Every structure is written in C-alpha cells, then in structure tokens.
Image (cartoon, rainbow over all chains, first blue to last red; front, side, top):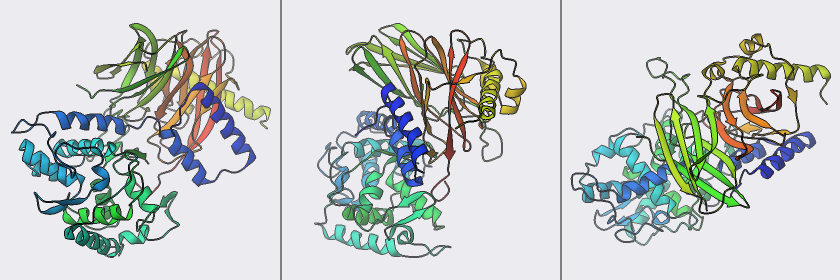
Length: 269
Length: 103
Length: 152
C-alpha cells in the first residue's frame, strides 16, 4: 500500500505526528519506520528501471543487437518471473549464474560487448552502470512474486552448500563472517535492524530487497554491490564482480528466501 | 542530454496530483573531491509545469534539494486525458522537458 | 506550552532567516541568487530589518520525519490554508544555505507541495507562507539526522 501526500494526508500526518510526540515518546524504531514509509512513494529506482528497459531493447555493441533474445532462465526474451528463480544453472555456460553474471553473458554473446567492460568498470560507470540499470528493470518485472530458486541440478545444490560455508566463514582483520551480523535474530547496528539471513522472514527482508536505491549515496545498488560492500565493511578483500563466491552466497540466501515476495526495487538508507 | 523524468499525474475530482522524479546530481557545492578540491555546485534552479500548454506551476530550488529530486504538486482544474508538461533548468543552463497524460 | 520569550525568539529566528533570503517583506518571482546564498542564521539575523515579526501559524503545516535515517534525503511536505498565499518556502536552520526551496502559489495550484532536502545535521526545519500583504507565517519542526548502519 502506497502512502500519498495529498493535502488532507499532509494535514492529518502533521496532526498525528504532533499529538504522537505530545502523548508518548516515539521509539527510534517507530520513527525510522515512518521515515521509510515517507520515502516509498517516489523511488528514484524508477529512473534506473526506465533506463534498463531502454537498454534491453536498444541495439548496441559490435553486433548491433538488442538483449531481447537473452535467456535469463525461462527461455529467450522471457523477463517476467526470472528474477525470483535466480541464481540457477545454465546449460549453455555450464555453470550456476546470478542475474548480473547472466546479463554479462548476454551482453557478450548477443551484443559482442567485452565482459571486461562490465567486470573491470567502477560502480556506477560505463557498462557497469548499464548492467545495474538492466538488473533493476529485470528484477522489477518480478515484483510481488515469490522466490522459488531451483535446486534440481547438482551444481545448484553444490553452490547452496558453498554459499552456506562462505556465510559462516570467519576471516579478515576483524574475524567477521556474514553470520556475525546476519546469523541471529534481534541484532542491530546503530539504528538499523540486521535481518537474520539463514531463513525467512529475514531473507524476505534482507535478500528480497536488492536491487535497491540507496539514498545515502544516491546510487542504485544491486546484490553484487551489496555483497561487495558487506565484505568491504568486514575488512575483507572485496570479491570480484560476479565471481563464483558471490553467486554462491546468492544461491544460499535466495533458496532460504523461498516463498518470500520480492519487493524489488526498494529504497533504502 | 539529461535522462528523462518520470512523471505521474493522477486525477481526483477536478484536481490532479503530479509526482515527478528527476535525474540530476544536485551537487551542493559543499562536497570535496578526492584531491580536496570543492566540487562545484550543479543543481536544478527552476522547475515549471503547464497543463495543456498553460503555465500552472513554478518553483526555485537551491543546492540543498536532494539528488534525483522528487517533487509533488497539485494542479486545479485538471482531468484525465489532460497533458502535463514539466521543465527543469539548472545553473549550467541545461534543461529538460518531459510530458505525461493525466490518468 | 511556549512562553512569550520562546515565541519571540522563534519569530526572530524566522525573521532573520527570511531577511537573509532577501525575500521578506517583498516577494520575488524570479530565481533569487541572493536568497539562496544566505549562509547562516547569524548573517540572516544581522540583515533583519523587516517590518513586523513573522508569526507562528497553525494554518501552515510542515510534514517531516522525526528522525531521518540519512541526511541526504529528508522528505518534506508543506501546505497552508491561509488566504492569498503567494509563496511557500522551506528552510533548514543549520544548513550552510538555509533556503531550500521557494514554491510560487497561484490560482492554478494548491498551496501544498512536497520535495526532499539534504540536511547536514539535526536541525529545525521551517515551512513559511508569505501572503499577499507581505506578512510571513511559519511552522517548524525539529528533524534529527543520523548516519546509520556501518557508517556509510
């Protein structure tokens, strides 16, 4: 349900907030919830979504082709429903791939764009920015659908176990694992609640929210970006873009999110 | 040329609420880059809008408005099918105009 | 309940803010560089020379969060039910440039607008309505700004 800011709502909210403050001390959690609610209508992610849709249809690259024949897991050109079944195994590459690595495969095989143009670019620049916009649009086509990653192929099951092991593996200067922050219920960092990512409802909050527009940087963040920054903040070396390790973590969290509805694209701090 | 705006205009009675998302850095002129130099201010200064060609809205923005700015206003005397046109102009003289139909 | 001294202090702050913008008591309809260059409350107060103090008014509403999870994007909505409003302004007291936005009001639009602002730190935020007689009416709210998360 979207919150609209018409004059009546503005006045009503103003009254609510005023009386709320007068009557009882609002908790920080409630105040943060209200802030997030106020941002729901008018998500700059829409701008990236629009750009992604253009890029999907536009003829580009040395082969001057669009991405409209790209197979994201449900057949060439099928976009609706693919996001909630990724990462998954692809026979043509013989590996488990997430949305972003699959987009790079298609940009290369259909358009002739060098994968390095994406993997070696900086966040928000050049072909990396294009991949982010594409991922935002593709993911948005599954908004509201339930996560249902396949585990029928042996490699998919292997990647789940690899992801699980990586999730609990401690290392880096602070001896952190993903699980240090995301392994239990009830943890928080400053004012932010940390979802437990070993199952639902945590994965429905944490995994099912990326790609998201991050107001703090004014950037669109995909799952790849989110994982990269998690490792950076744990004082780990940052993982390579679309490396197997990042895909494995996506399989682990995505399978754990089974049944949760995708909220993508969201807006976050 | 700047990326397109996203404009939604929804009629309710004889008014239309218009919500706009603009793609713009809105650089405040306060930020320093990696070498310590101030990144110059670069922001939308004026936004105007018309309903079926008639000017109905204008505002001025300073550098404090957030990046990828959001704007909401309500136009009187609008109905479904009417055309809303929104134009922004920034301090470098760049400009962008996009249109939407009131639904 | 506010004491008279508190009311006058708030009025003085708003008068200072508006004087610094160069908009009060006359209103301008074109982009006003001087207004948007107003740097601090102290400078704004120094430039005070307005006729009549701005009044706090329950007919001006400001909707803002109590806490902004990040100061880069603070949603603000303002409206007024006063007759003959010419302009609605948003100001953030502790921003380096206090004036955020000037919305022009005419018979074609509702005196009700929303946008999002950057705030460098927790601060009082003001919504000001300037009516055709040149008087200013305001509502204010304190918005706390946090950094959040792992710090970025």
